[in-house]
Image (cartoon, rainbow, N blue to C red):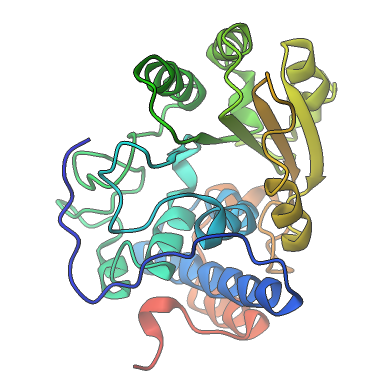
Length: 299
């Protein structure tokens, strides 16, 4: 990986998942702050994909709030965990969580969608080298993850690979080719998380594809699967602590989420795939969340 200079003054992420009620409540507040940040960014840039970003915030907060063996100071170490954000259209969620846990300064979020900036509307590793991959076209994250894991196993390197996919992304055949490869090679340090919010760009997942259980599909391909409420941080933390789910198989966590989660008038509404929030929408959402965006907080 390209060495990434880490600016001074940034706080490293946590190490270890919080098991206490106070720790979970801290993560919940972090999630509200990240959601407020996503909405502010979408409003300022007049750019959409909010339903996809808000649904996966709780998973990202749990990952970067303690599960992943990564800090801003250890991004170049060979034994680190790798995280692949395969659902690239929802990148405001990742940028917000990066700012939340010290990988970006909050003020940098004002560069979102600005020409020539480090934070384009789909994550680009050439612009932001701390990313493990560029994404946008769907269906590649799990394949890249299995390749990374294969190389790490051959080299005897420690560390895990985590890939976050959308449910619509699982329409792609490349996802299932990667799933077969991972199972064939016993990649028990590989974790796929499916943000199953039930909505794709133009309709509901169950209407666009066969309404079969995605956990059963992965199990049929040789994975060990668990399904949880992906917007319940306590469940997310508890389940991540149980990874790997089996000693000799890759793990998949099907996170049943709500599109637009955390903001009542955005939840389960297909319009928020492309719609950008107006000033009125922004004010209403921030009032409901009860927190300020990270790059608008008072010092």
